[in-house]
Structures are given as C-alpha cells and as structure tokens.
Length: 409
Image 1 (cartoon, rainbow, N blue to C red):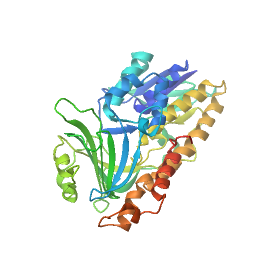
Image 2: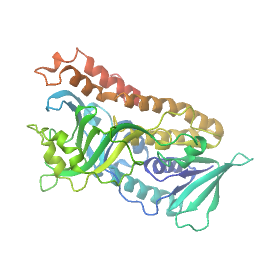
Image 3: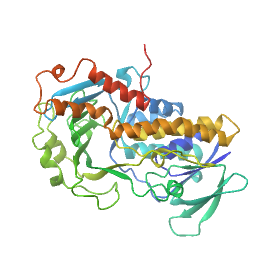
Image 4: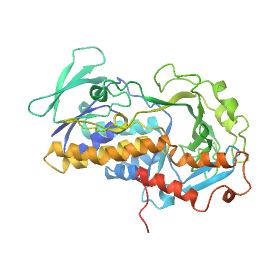
C-alpha cells in the first residue's frame, strides 16, 4: 500500500511516522520550501502523548517543553475560580506537554526524515490536485514551488493534511469560502519571565471575549526565568477582518494592552508580562463548520483540513495526532482500503465535530463566563457563585467530549 500525504505539519508528519511504523509506504509533500519553527506555545494532551509514546518519541519531545501540572481558572481580579491537576499529576500515565509549536514541529520533521528517509518528506512541493483512476488508485498532481515542471504520483490513498485552507478539501467543497471568524482576535507571544504559581501551571483568566491565557513552555534557566507563552483575547468584530489569518502578522500593543492594564495581581503582573515580549503576533479566532463526510473514495482529510477548531481546550494538535494513529491502525488492520477509510471517517469525524461545536460554546472556559455573569466584581467565596459540583461537571463534560477522561478507579 502506498499513501501520499499532502502537508508536512504536525498532523501530516505524525501520520507519516505512524503509517511507516505499520510497514506502509508513505510519501509526504509539503508546499513550504524551508520549514521554520513558527508559532508560539501549544499543549499536547495526554491521550495524544500516549500515541506519540507508541513511536518512542517521548524522550525526544519531553525535554522541549514543560509537563503541565495543573489548569487554573481565574477572574479578571486574579481570584481563583477552579483548579484541577493535569497530566501525570492527574493520574495519566504520560504527561500533558506545554511546548513551543515550532520546536515540536521541527522535532517531528527531523524524526520523520530520519525514519522514512529525506526523499520521503519533500518540501517545496504542493499537492495541487488529484484524479481518481479507474483502478481505484489516486493520481496526485504535485507542483514544485520553484515553478519547475510538475509531476504525477500515484497512491492507494491520498491524505489531506494541508491545513485550514486545504486545497483538497476545497476540491470537495468549492463554495465553502473563508473560515468562520468568531469576531475575536488573539494576540500571542512568549516572554522570559519568573515562574508563577506551581511553575508548571496553565491558567485562563477573565471571560470571553476579554480573556488572558498563560503557561510556561520551558524549564527555569540559570537566570531564574522561564519562557512563558501567553495569549490575550478581545472581541474585535466591530473592526472587521481585512484578510485571511497569517501566523506572521505582527500585533500592536496599543490594540489590546489598555484593556489589561489593571490586571496586576499578587502572583502575576499581566501588563509587565506583555511588555516583556520581543514580538507579538495577531491571529483571528477561526474555524470551519463540521463536514458530513471526510472520505471520498481513496481521498480523506486529517487535522486542520478535516476539523479546524477554535484554540479552546488545547485540542487542535492533539486531535490531529489522534487522527493520524487512528488512520494508521485502520489501514494496517485490513486489506480492504475502502472499508478502512470509511471506518476512519465514522470513528473520527463525529468526535471532532463535537469538539468543534463545544469550543464554539467556550468548552470548559464556560466556567469563566458564568463567574463573570454571576459575580462581575469578584467574590468572597467561590461557593457563593457556583452550586456544589457545578464546576466539576463542566470540567468533566469537556474531558469526555474531547476524549481524555480518566477511567473510573
């Protein structure tokens, strides 16, 4: 069996290694000529880390980031709403990893090239189209970025891992248009800062659409500082959106920092953290509507090409990784390729659709909104704001939807 993967991002590279480990012939084409460690921090949840452990990658990946120990929710006054353990601290056999997206991507790229061979992960080449052949295979049209003559590759399966603006998805849905914008803008950056709370804490504060998120993505250095990833979020729908999202768009502090100037708490100074960043990037919060199918013949979707979602609940990269291993397991478990692709669609599409829709309802961050609605000026006792068991239920419901609930003891 030969599988061609369009896209050499986190999902595409993970799929390549998972398929290769099953003895399947894999070829990856990535449109970017020189892949760079772009982006800021992301979280890889324990159920996705467990899959990466199947490839023996934990020793490579864990030193790149920080094993998250807890998730906390605070109001805009710095008062604690909810705290829960995460990763190993919560009882999972593997950690939740907070890491720079670019470092994770580069590590996966190096591993994929080492395991598959450099010629199997080709950059500077895009999948521009495809045709299903009468023999059931797929003719894949590959176009070099340098405008030299394109060529045709033939695969038993074509996997679209080419992101939220997937060319292959667009072939099946030509009228889908641009991604859906929530109206919110995210300003994202990293800052060298003293550790806060446990030193392995991820927190979300405020309420939608006036929110701040931060977590460390490096261990504390000899200077006593760590690299903290942070995200500021505001509603900017009244300004409109002039063009598609761009990971490299530089943000302007005056567009958002005034709304956070008084967020100075006894355990963290938010304005100082923001001002300490070298560069801030601006990104609209976008997703796409869930599809009624991913698989068309021998072509299927994976990762952001299949289920782009709002960055709520730390699920984007994690779900792409789970897609990759699910696909590899199913394709390797039967000689019936068409049945395997249908099973992959049936297994992954409903689950990720539920996460996309839950994220639109703010996922576990709904707790922040409720706290603000009920106690906008703060509270003396959080039990005066939430009924007994209400916070636990919100947190547990999202874990169940996202697929990383721990089994009962």
